[in-house]
Image (cartoon, rainbow, N blue to C red; front, side):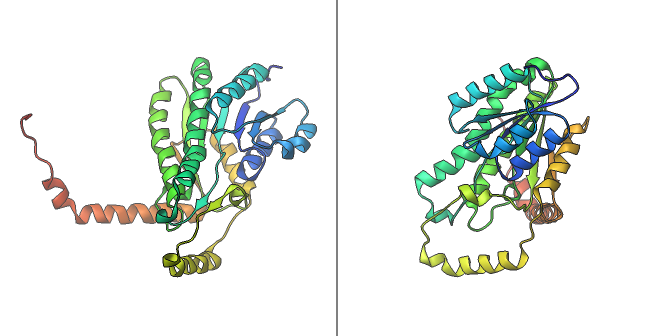
Length: 281
């Protein structure tokens, strides 16, 4: 089957739930074709029946690099091309940095960073050959700064953003666009695939403070609102490198940036004194 020239072909990871599901539904409602991949694609059966021929569900564990390349190949063979790729698959592993086992730390990076890296590597040859395409890297408020109990999650998203900035500069010369999407809180199943560390009692007081703070200040939104923003994003001729989703994450981003600039300015004299051009030793 070859996609219509007037529609776009999407490749969405983590498509069966949460934000990925919302992106998939929005793309299909707009008349586009979607390759929806997930470890469990059964939740997509209803959509596949409703949008017969326009949704191709494929099972995929994005941490398996060989499988990623194989599934991307199947997607291109089926629809003929890819136009929008959404690296959405991910999970939140919580715990204080000291508490993480090596296995859990590596698992967090494998899913949130390496999974997105493998998909990016697999789709780039196709986008580059077509001379077009838009790669959306779904990051997080956790990439704006490190927060207690989400240190490894933040680390995975910081890594994703660093890689994506470089990829954006590399891909631009081939007509391929990259946008890092930073969502705030949405009613999703992010915790469904989450893990929690074995708690160390020395952090009990901090954990209680965090739970109280989240209970009082947590306000989440419908994933459909994020999907509406993403549809506007992919319709733009000049999409940004970064897009914040939500008032809360918008305000947090500006507050963190302001405080960083204030700190840099306060230490400017010492920073500048640490550099002086000298002949090579």
